[in-house]
Length: 133
Image 1: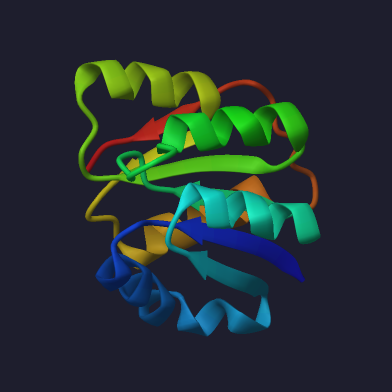
Image 2: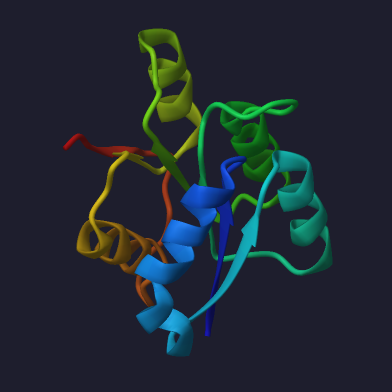
């Protein structure tokens, strides 16, 4: 079973993701955390196949989190799911992620993106795909 970590400082967003992706419980082990620090703690216990993170968070932001993951867990897929990306943050997010999705994101787009990132024949390269809705 693939392990997916969701990181967002907004509890309503995490709860929405839990509800939206409930049907994937048989395919993915999903962990939801409210900060980058919690994400790093969870990853130190057991690595994840994909990390889905917001960009703007207090303390460590999404770029800093993904930089750390890239350095220490290079085989982990890095996906940005954010509604507030200014031009500067957008450029930085592209440099550390494999894929960028904007909020709101529909269930099927998110599901397909994660499935593709952790598919059996996927080798994550240092390239990024961007879906703007």
